[in-house]
Length: 297
Length: 297
Image (tube, rainbow over all chains, first blue to last red; front, side, top):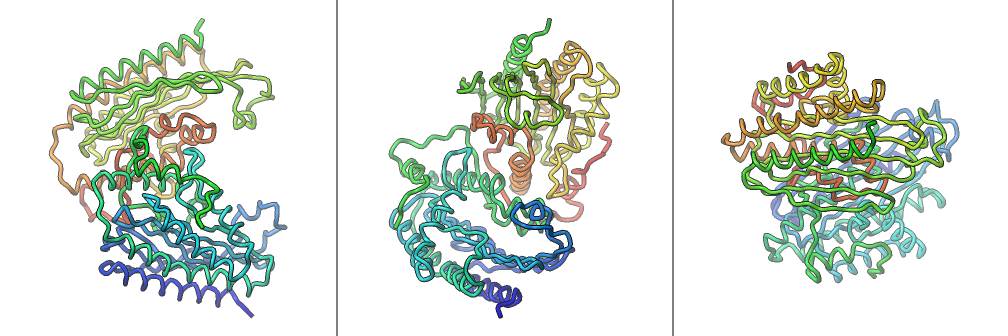
């Protein structure tokens, strides 16, 4: 039987593996680790890297927390009375902000949730936020995700690609955060073993995919203008994470470990009043790619 | 009779006066103006300044908008059925981010709201966010606000100072945004004339108070370390505005003019994982001042 402890253990091993792969490709940066306990139950292992050769700031976090079912779930109309029930949640969360504006920002999350009433589900996803959209990279990235999905169910990629487009959307800017990827939540319609196998495959896809994108782009030349644009795009990333991201909101509202939650924010971001890129510039072309429904594969 | 048009006109004149005073003290920066229309009714006059001698980025915005009562007010339990009613809202909003970390960030808002069912109120406030808390400046700032309040009602300052402490609070950091100031909303217990006279006095207090703080601090020397700290403090400012500020939330949810709403964000902000200032450093002393309930006068 697949227990929550087995899932958490696998997630911890995934964290180890990903940190190792990122350190290797970075060549200089090393993760530092903070172990923390949650007063209400459980804790985590936060790993952050900064001022690496390729990675400016990033985090690869594992956590496994438990306790009383939070009130936002008690109010959830899909569940029954949960007053005397407990929950258990475990997962790995990653955000990487690179130095070079030609290397994209990446985010991954895989998570498992269960309650003492027997309800359980998996969630997660991977999405890419290039400062400059490179169509070849975008195709590569989405093809990797599609291959991962197709091994388990050919309906997954189209459904979870659309879910990512809808989820990673900055509605006040009417633009997507980046070129999307896959996003899924509350998966429980197949057996726990089957869904976990898919989530494992997603987790395993992260390191080789991002390492390839780091490797391909990390030596590219860039200008001061490219750097300024990177800071503006990071500003949008901050807007998404603080205004819309459910994980961040959940963390802030449930008194989570704030430094682990906000590791997703970049070292430097900027805002300019009414910035409009020049017609047909690379920046302008990128904005034109920040739309829902683009078929990158 | 005091009409909404008279109030809006006064707010526009206040915008003019404040822009003139800030340009004069800055010495180099000039406001640029954008006039905008709101599809659903009304519009505004956004004025932004950037790369001045003292002010790095700032906005002094006037708006007067009207239309159908927004749904968040329809759901407000203090009001009756508003289905066929309209609203009118006008005000001036200011945020100034200076270059020199020794000059504080300032925010002001004064606003008037009415509905076609006869309900009306005023709201507003001024608050200060020093990157480095200077107790003499803090005392000066709060004394200015207290004097302004006391001319109208000796109960105002203690009540609105507390309201500011509670409002400008970053609960996930357990720290106030800055040293507070005054904040008030839905004032309508005295005559419209009386409350407007108070709001006018608040508006008039802004320019001389901030000009004094600019003037006193703008030539102060600072280091690279001071600048880094300024960027971190601005990161907290971004967190407050995107996560908690009601004006920002209201703007984002009601499809407001995004560039006018987000003019409050700084040109550059930064985040560092688990930054802890050295014991008894100026940075550490500042953090110790970011608490509710400090009597600055």
